[in-house]
Length: 310
Picture 1 (cartoon, rainbow, N blue to C red):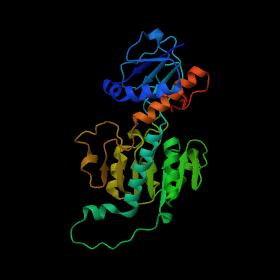
Picture 2 (picture 1 turned 180 degrees about the horizontal axis):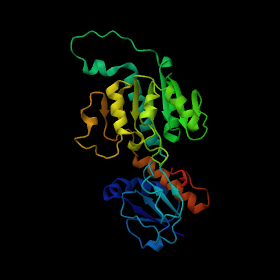
Picture 3 (picture 1 turned 45 degrees about the vertical axis):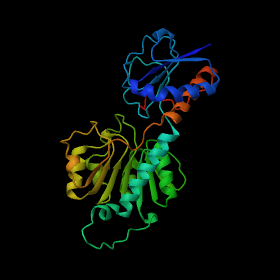
Picture 4 (picture 1 turned 90 degrees about the horizontal axis):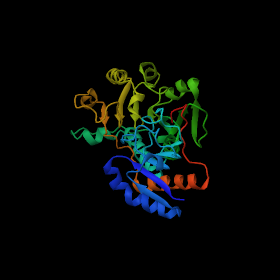
């Protein structure tokens, strides 16, 4: 039996994905038909980007699963017409990209590189940074991306703590969980990395009270989601010196508006949502494997827990 696969994303995504996804599906040995358009009652799987034109799933009567092309599912998980399994994108390329971006910026702030890169003013700056073992880094969020980043920072020698909603165990990482553990995780964060999902429970998790719980002069690095931070509270903490610098890759509105105060603040680095991106070749392998699983009766990988939102 042929598996009918609807590719529901922007046209430029089809241009990038058609060849690698076809190759990955061919390697499964399945009979399939991959298209941009089907009658809804003929679709078995939807390869999906939340910004596609497909927003009502109720007509897809034989649909087996929706396979998200993005790591984030906050724009689809609450859709009341979606009643089949939803898989998020967990992709080796995406994970490695995030690890490299996070490690690069943690090392940048740990070593004080900005002073030497921008301070070409004739001043001989001799301050030596501590070793990584003496620098405390905390990662909030220990899902696939957070676990990988925490583990990699620990391998580099940093004193790493992590926090998650439920208990996690990671070699060489001190882990905390639940409401009680959050204060302890923040108190250990000379450098704080935010890698939580965007859910009602995580909105503004870094507010004025929690920013005050950081060591004075802490660094905030956010490649997770813009809604994790109360922007006004962060700006106030930067102005007071409670936070010495914020490197931000994600924002509530993207692109970040030209008049947003983050652009002009001397203690903020803005990067344009480039910390990590899905690589078409490796993402296609993930999609193809889940379709193979659906057709052979194996359990789907990377399913979203609707109650938790990720």
